Image (cartoon, rainbow, N blue to C red; front, side, top):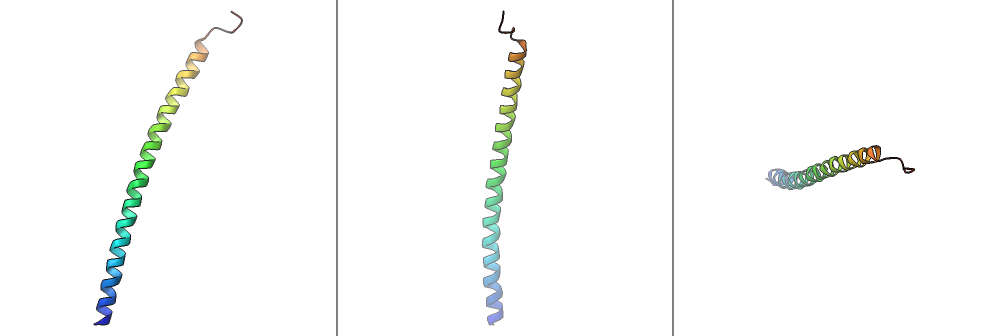
Length: 61
């Protein structure tokens, strides 16, 4: 009987650990998505600034 109880305890621990890991993965996925969005926005801003600098007349005008 003890071995069945041990297995039940181990299973409960593994289920708990799996739920924690799932939460961590979801949080990290959300953070990666946010960082990708931030990077995309920053890339677009740098590109726009670069185009503005290239279109500007030289400073001696």
